[in-house]
Length: 116
Image 1 (tube, rainbow, N blue to C red):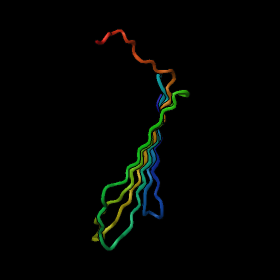
Image 2: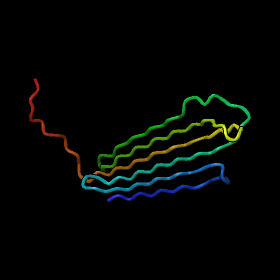
Image 3: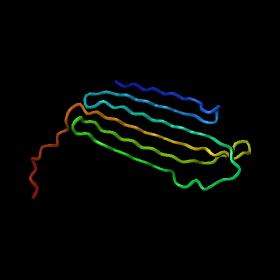
Image 4: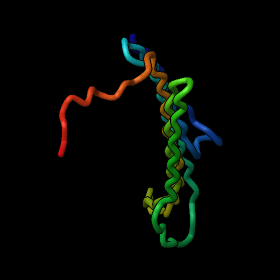
């Protein structure tokens, strides 16, 4: 079974946009919950700065007692666009969260092969 929810919302009187995608699925092996958030905010500026590299943060954890696996990634940065002869700075903030719950304990494969 798989459920997908998609929402788009304008924020700050049309200066920004938030997009949310939430997916929940369940099968024989695991239950997964995936959330994606995209946030964009636009501001008019006079001059352009060097955008540099975006900030990326990744975190992963595994709980072997409850068989939960979590993964989180965040990306933050900005870029510039020209719109109607005006320079616009667009800041973005993307988030990806994945939660997996394994229904059964994962066993390592049998070690029938002898290595010398």
